[in-house]
Length: 500
Image (cartoon, rainbow, N blue to C red; front, side):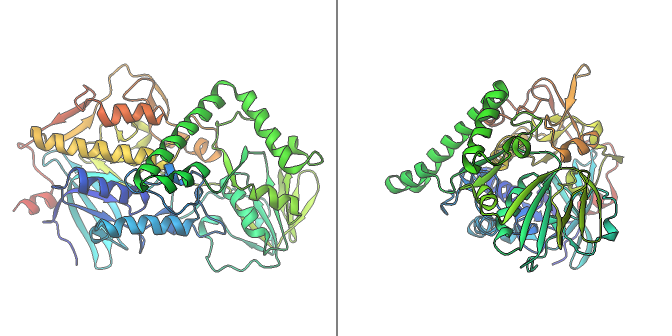
């Protein structure tokens, strides 16, 4: 049914992926009086896990922490495949009745805040045409990258190549690569996932990397979690397994930051044990950066290393000179023959799903904003962004952000506030939003918001610290200002019509 401007929502959620569905669940349980809707540009639930269909697509975080804190992961896979995650998120929405609030095939074009009415006017395109929605609070759960396309370097001679080039972000689910010579460009999580998944059917798979990444083998089953499920109630077993994995991840991250050489030696030693002394581990698996300056790549049950040992896959560390008719010419002079090239070259980051956002008719320029508690932007009222951790599971931060938003909504309703807006101090010292050397991050940094060097403007990437401050910290902290609508100012035409 086509909505009209008169339909005013308490909360409008943009995106029905793992973040949007999780936020809706928290709203229903922590602020059940709030009327909400979810806008989803795709035709079904899942977000990232509905978009990506390349071979072997899976989570690179363990599901005991990547799963919601309110819904136990019971599948047993530690690093679940994409379809399993999509089913998990879809079941969460169906069981809670969240799916009834989703408007599919509907895309947000713009969002405009009006301080006079303390409302957002959100313009959307749906199956029945364009229309505005009015909402008190905007929750943006559209992810951190451009859905329309992934990052594609400008390869010299690409038009000369007579084979196929398919980016993982645009992978057709029924694509047949049987018997083909496949070259995967990249060394990140996508490449490490693709290699073993494609090696069984392809004639040969070559992973061509400019520089190595850290790759660690991990069991595909969590023995402790499996044991706990046998003797404890499901929710308690899940909570204990989740706490264990959170603690281990934080320990390993701190270990990597404080003693990077020690961790690096350990990772190289483990890879050498997997591949043998004859394999050139130093060349292909010794990155120039320290552990956790970029995300670790995980190989469930060592599947990546098994593909290399079998001879069905190989790894080449070199630079691309140009594409030629038969394949890729390297700077060393070697030609890698290829029928199919997969540029696993990363994402293009963007803020707010690419929508046009305005605050009192002023366009939002993300690079001029500062993040507040890793979830709001300076000067942007009644709006939050779902942005997860870079050094841990995405969903850990999303659960905390949703809880904080519910606290804010209940607090404003209780105290009679119309809206809240983060206002940084004049003497704030700024820093880049992300302390990560990954290419997709470095390319995006000039266009991303900044962070401060002190709380609440600094994003600490620490779950326990965030759990304390976001879940239990004061809402009226002097940085988040609570205000009333300006009744003396003229509201926007859409909002004025809604009030009639």
